[in-house]
Amino acid sequence: MIKGLSIIILLQLFGELAVGELGWPVPGAILGLIFLLIALFILGRVPEACQTTSDGLLSNLSILFIPAGVGIIAIWSDFANGGVAIMVAIIASNFFAIGAAAITMDYLSRKSRRKRVR
Image (cartoon, rainbow, N blue to C red; front, side, top):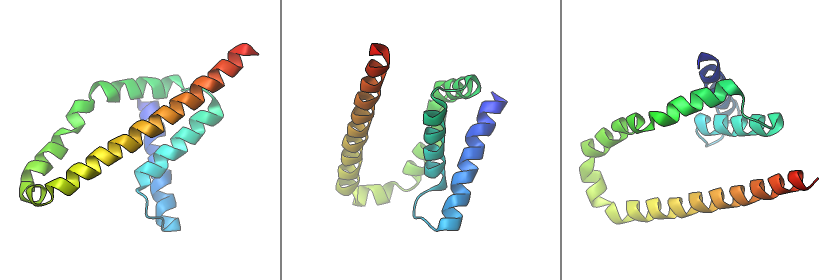
């Protein structure tokens, strides 16, 4: 699990460094995830160390939402004032995320079918 976590954190560090050097308006963690995605596409599989680590993180994912919940409670008045705008942003971003996931799944399933046919 340490090896997989080290890989994930190292790619996040590379993302942070790239954002710092290039001055892009993107969070370094997001760029690190893009680096991870590129590495997984190049490798063609998920390494066992990363699989074990990701399973562990996903099984405890709900714990990661506790700080966000506390933050929402702490600034509730701001949410009350801009509630409609926040709801529109949340709903729109969910539609975009679902669409991106659907397009990715369609692409990967077609790619998988092509490999099986050969």
